[in-house]
Image (cartoon, rainbow over all chains, first blue to last red):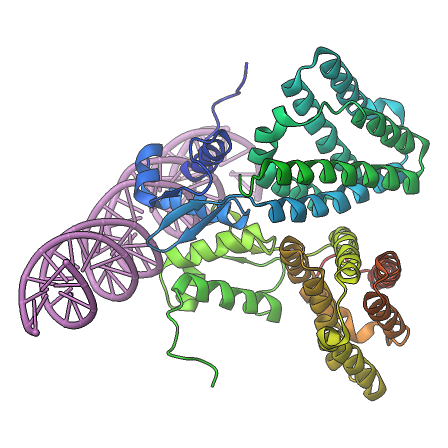
Length: 225
Length: 225
DNA sequence: GCGTTTTTTTGTGTATGCATTAAAAGGCGC
DNA sequence: GCGCCTTTTAATGCATACACAAAAAAACGC
C-alpha cells in the first residue's frame, strides 16, 4: 500500500535521511563530533556515501566537516536564531504577498484553513505537539502557495537549522493563543487578494514570534542548542 | 605579498573553483552534459574529488547530477530569474534596513561610497563592465553591512545562479543612469539611521531593476540562459 | 619532573576496481 | 523497413586501498 515496486534508493540518500533524523532526534547531539568511519559503521555502509551525505548536510548548514576532527553537529546560538528568523520573516512575507496576488479561491486554500483549524483544536486541548505540527503545516503550505521554489528551499533549509531549538523550547513557551488570530488574518488577506495586507500581517506575526523566542532564549540563558 | 607559505588546498576545493569558472565563462555551456570521467580528466584528477565538487555545485543550484546522463549545467529560465530577483529583493532590503539600524558612521561606509562613485565614473565613461563590477561591489557590501551571515550566503548563491544571465544581457540593457540616484539614497538612509527608508528605497530600486530585466528577457525571447 | 624532539597512531583525501544497471547496439522475425 | 527481443557497452554508486599529514604518545635530555 505504501510502495509500488520498491524504489531503488541510493545509500547516499539513505545516509542523508538517517543522519538528518539522528541530528533532529538528538541521537547525534549538537556540538558532538563523529568520525566518518564511526558514522559509516553505524549506518552499515562504507565511508563514501556517508561522506557525500555529510557534504550535503554541510552545505545545508546542519554540520561542519573539519579534517581529523570528524563531522561536527552544528549548535545553534541565539545569534543564529535571530539571523534565521529574520530570513524566514522576509521570505514568508514575500510568499504571503505572492499568494494573495495569485488569486486563489477557497477550495485551493483548504489545506491552509485546515492547518489553522487544527491549531485552534490543539490549543483547546492544550496539545503542544499537535499545535507545533499544525503550525509547521501552515507555514509550509503558505510558502508553497507563494509559488517560488527557491523560497521554498531556503525556508525548508532554515527550518531544519532551528528544528532542534524549536522542539526544545516548545514546552517552556507561552501558549500561542494570540497567534492563530494572525493566521486567520493572513488567510483572509490571501483569499481577499490583498497582497499588501497579507505581507504586513504575516510580517508582524513573524516579528512578534521572533521577539518572544529570542527573549525566551535570553531568559533561559541558553546560548546554544 | 599575497600568500604566506602556500596553503594546502584540496583537490576537491580546486575542482569547485575551476568548475565554477568554467560554468561562468561559458566553457561549460548552459544545458550541456558532462560525464564525471570527462570532467575528471579535464581537471587532471580522479573522479572522487570531481564528484564531491559536483555535489556541492548541485546543492548551490548551479548543476544537476543525473545518473548516466552526467553533470548538467543548469540553464536559467525567465521564471528562474523572477524567482531569484524576488529573493534578492527581499533579502537585500532586509540588509539595508539592518545596516541603517546598525548606526554606521561615515568611515565604515567608505567601501559603499566608493562603489557608488565608481559606478558614476563608469557611466560617464560608458564602461559597462566597470559599471557591472562596481554594482556588484555595492550590493555585496550592502549585504555585508546588514550583518546577517545567512543572508550573505543566500545572496551569493542566488547571485551565482544569475551570473551568466547578467553578463549576457549587460550590453543590451539600457544604460543605468537612474540607478545610481537610488544607490545614493540608500547610502544616505543608512548613514542617517533611517531603517524604514533604507528598506523602502532599496526595495523599489530592486523591483524596478527586476522589471527592466524581465521585460528585456521577454523582448529578447530568451527563455533560457 | 618538564620541555623538546622523535616515533607511532590515526583520519582524511584521493585513486582505483568492480558490481549493477540503464541505455545503446545489434539481431531477428515478419 | 520496422517493431521487439537479446546482447553489448559504458557510467555510476560504492567499497576498498593507500599516501600524507596531523595529532598523540613515547623517548630523551637536562
